[in-house]
Image (cartoon, rainbow, N blue to C red; front, side, top):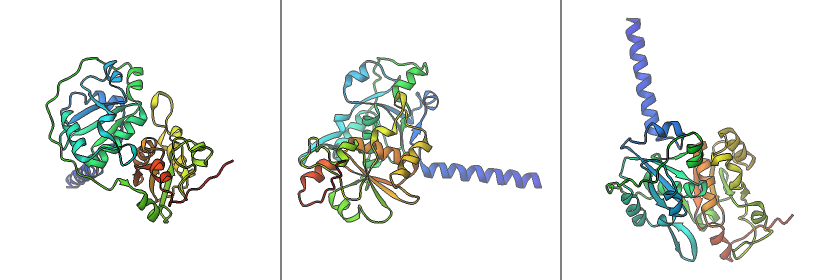
Length: 292
């Protein structure tokens, strides 16, 4: 009888664990060993995100689909490389054979991948999109195969669902300095401090924002730094237990890597897509300059 009760208890624990894993969704980061075992899994769509198609044609993972980042970015309202509208993202993903319910795994250079990650999460794939840690560099370093062959895929059936991942200047003005919300500036220190405006209308940073340069988040072979290190960087930037985060940079690219890093830590996060390009040109909005 005791053995039966133990068996039942064990089964219940397994069921609860499975239910919990399902509720949490897919892991934000997957390693090469895991992906090597799922390359032919029809439920997994592997996507190579590139700035230039030459990166893909020079060699990619077997079965990987090509996603130029420009296909899901648009210049609009005087802003550079913003997230594309839902209909455009829908069309692009379906052309890659992505359907509702699939697990999408992205790889490529960190900034491009992080930007694609934000895009997919924004339009309904939160909990269903992962990133290959180390990308193509570590995949090759580990002796795993690449190819130049392009695999034909059938068009998918994807339904975009827009969430609240993206915020604007009005949201930042109203919420950016509230308790429990931390605004993180992903730019290099010289831009954050206001030493130079770069290509924008004004120099400085958003009041209350803390600098956490995107370049501090990755190590060799484009791998994300160890989770404990990333957590300490966020803590040093003032992110406490229970806080939510909003990231920004020049135009949204670098901020996407901070967004991704926050997701790896399980921190609630949003992104100010217009970023400093948008804030700086709004003369009615305050800026902080801290020249050394």
